[in-house]
Length: 116
Image 1 (spheres, rainbow, N blue to C red):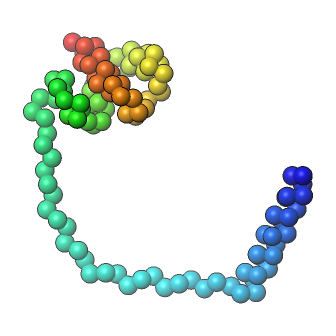
Image 2 (spheres, helix red, strand yellow):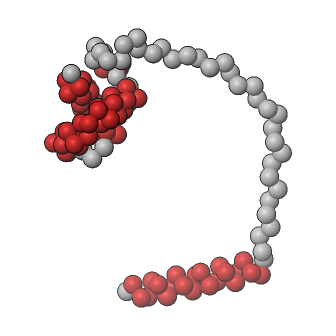
Image 3 (cartoon, one colour):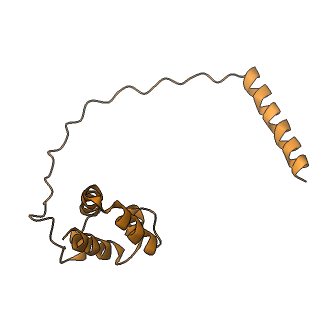
């Protein structure tokens, strides 16, 4: 069955190759560049005053804060503890925490307790 499908696919490829050789496709010209657009002024994001505090609201914890705290703990010599905690949670990397409802907050609290 697979051999038949492979033979049919091979015939189709050969037919397409022959058709392309008879009627080569020419490259289309690139569209003319548009007039430069002036960038809008960057809006500064509100940065938490003290990133060491555990956020009170779930929306305040960003992935960047979680990543920074994890890197800080890892560089402080807690790499094995972080890996063990992620394994306990059934995760391989901190990006997988985002799929969990309370995972990022719990992990962030654990990191802060670890660093004290």
